Image (cartoon, rainbow, N blue to C red):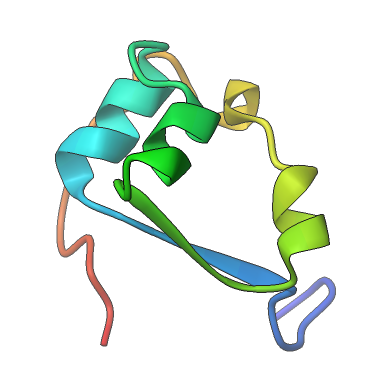
Length: 68
C-alpha cells in the first residue's frame, strides 16, 4: 500500500442518511454535531479542520458502509 499509513487523528461516526445529507449540502457539520447526528472520536482540533466540501456532491452509497 502506498502513501502515509498510521493511526487516524480523528474518526467521524454518522448514519448513512446523515452523511448523504451533508454531502448534498442539506446538513451542516456543526448542526450535525450539536444535534448528536455526528460523533467524533480522537483529536477534536484535527476534526475542526474537516470541511464537507471534500465530499462529492453526487455521492452514492454502495456496499457495506459500517466497519466493525
